[in-house]
Amino acid sequence: MTIKEYLERNHMKNTELARLVGCSPATITSILKYDTAVRNPEHFKKFKELGIETRAYDPNANKKKESGTGYLYYEKIQVAMVRRSDIYCYTHDKLNAVTQYLNGRRICYYVIPKDDYWVVKYDKTIKKEEWVQ
Image (cartoon, rainbow, N blue to C red; front, side, top):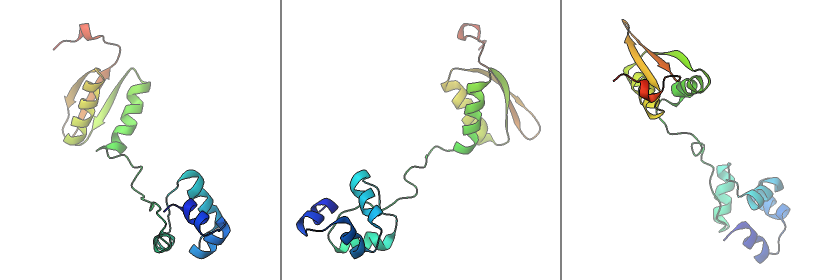
């Protein structure tokens, strides 16, 4: 049952349930109004013992699952803001990620291999008709 159903069946107020569970009344209100997840494992266990269904907090729920997110995040901002520039790639995986991103955005680029890294030079001002394959 939900918290609302439990409160109605037992003729309780939020503050009484909060005391019973061991949390603050604000936690009960937050769960009722905004359907927030329960962060404290002890509180979650107590809700379960009372037969109240709640969601347990998952710290990984809102994290992006894209590979290379940290690296590509800044590169995407750079590509969005700068018409022509260089991107330095120090691993083959990052080179592949950058070139796939540029291909997906249909942005002209070329790669210059150096001794232990690659330089990806891109230019958003070149139109598709001007590309040399």
